[in-house]
Length: 296
Image (tube, rainbow, N blue to C red; front, side, top):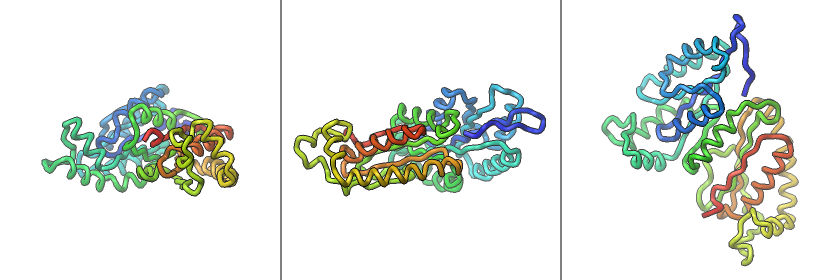
């Protein structure tokens, strides 16, 4: 996160995170996680009031990091939040937009389970509300600093991810790297910045004694590490990562998600995700590793 700036009057300029996105994608959970790391959180804030809140917080040193939750309730939302962001930019306030998303199918299921109407349903049902909201938020999503898709994330993983992304860090730790494994047969992840298809490496699944194991088991790790394809791939991958990460950091990028995909998401992708996470950690960056399909 960027360092606090000073106004001409000497008051500290707050840092602001706008938490928005699709209804049902987890805004309340994200707000709780941000509050846990010491941010001053205000949910359901009308966009025109955001600059006023920032003005009030400028004189309160305990409120230098603010998270504001906003959602779509009516057609003026985008124009209002655009105006609010413009005002903050003119004042030099550091603003980041966290956009929460999920697939239409997942959002529909969540609304059905909660038995709550969609705020934009207008008597036409949840599906119509989701469609209308996605259209209204398309422009804001394109401007987001971070998009988190919560379709395949449980509450605990989601909270941990939000906390790690917005914890105050400097130096290499300011770039948060997430390394994930997945199986292509279960679908590719929606929020990865970089997807690496590792199905070219021989599959341990076809070795009978390795089939029930995963890429975290020593026997599978030894098998894959001994393959010339793995050794050459990692050599090129480490060089690429060592080149990219400092440049991403210098450019101001705060979040990077690298996903490895194999057929089932159990052996090759899991092993390589673990190896890359260890290497990124050794370079001094903040790293999280997650295996989406290892139990499938």
